Image 1 (cartoon, helix red, strand yellow):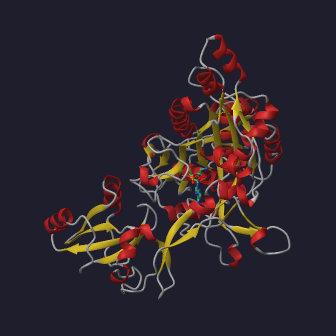
Image 2 (tube, helix red, strand yellow; image 1 turned 180 degrees about the horizontal axis):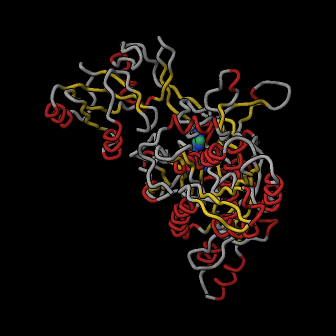
Image 3 (cartoon, helix red, strand yellow; image 1 turned 180 degrees about the vertical axis):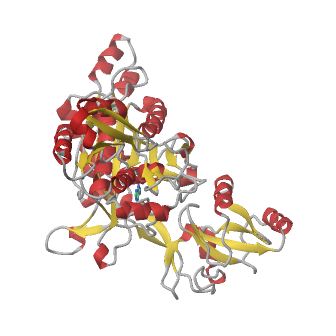
Length: 556
Ligand code: GAP
């Protein structure tokens, strides 16, 4: 496995994904549609492998709990469109908003909190000195403005100066609000303009696009949910939404699962499915798209046990990403600061992100999954808005409390409560991107293949290929026999066309761990050549041993 995603070219990876049938732009023949992607044959297999690994490791065979006892997680598959009041109760109608600013001249729209003031100074000393003295934005020249696409991921500078990528990310992580940069002989610093400052000094702030003052509108809230209408009449009563997270479908079914599955607290409900967000700036391939898939668990527990389960899930989820092939320092955990927390997360015990070092964030990191303490926020909201009783009654705890002689209040507290929820919420699409980035390895030294996708065997869309060296002399028939045998267990490819070098190169880019070649010797001594993807090493084995050889090598 590769150890770092530094220096990997996204352009080359995107081109490989298209060339080998992993991912295509949606509606490509109509010029594409921003923020939407289609998965090709290999991409679909890869996504299914990641999805199945998650489902297997979290739902069918979850890890043991902190006390070593088995835990219970049950699956659901809920509707994408739910009653519109669900989204009022969940807080998404009122709270799932980004403050947006429009440039009236160019009609460009961007997030208000991505607006930055840029001060240019002659020397580094001057930049440092000014930076120290200015804590509030003062709108005097030589200020110019710039916008960043998202929290430091990729800056778009609308002045001629560009930030040094490595340095800006490192400094961004250290001091979010104040960054000094240098570019040869130019020095300066950047201050994030708050929404309040923007409103207050609107007429003084130049637009990052036109650099003219007075072109910006005040920040306006823009809801990220896609609206739709149910039935034939398009009025407000018929309005609903495509779900922006799969989580709410779990909360809505919490009581159904509890009542039908004889589960006891603590337990989890899991769901994998599509989510839709009308992202203002979809970008970085499938990293931020408008239609994507999530893999979410809502873990229900007694409020007093929430912290213990929060710590448990942070650890379990971080380790799981290693098990699908992400490596070393490419994964890190980062705790949210209070001003980043979602509307449901608990202050002070809020949210850890599992982050991955994507090539476009490197040396910084981008979110792969959030583990959040949602408290009883959602169940309480749905209880209030729907009138349904969602409390949990624990009869065993009541009996035990009585036996222990506890007072009524204490017995009630232990046995009747609205559960708290710890939520590990992972992006399936973003996970696919991380797995692709990790596997993508340029191989300039290798003859034939320019790139190898060295997927973890569990993730590889094709596990093996069978190649008759030439399409005659009994080789295709012998190859076909081997192929028929292997494909009862694995996704295997059979290919007789083109030179063997080209066929190997294609399998290297598809990330196929092993190829088996049938040649003239096979017919006389029953041996075949095996070739390993990562090293291009080759050897010979008896054709009868191929199945066992593959099972031993890839372990799946
Ligand atoms: N239920 C909680 C929730 O939805 P989130 O942090 O907004 O939390 C969870 O989303 C995960 O979904 C993220 O960590 C990310 O992997 C993925 N995700 C969110 N927005 C996305 C987008 N626009 N495109 C692709 N993946 C996205």
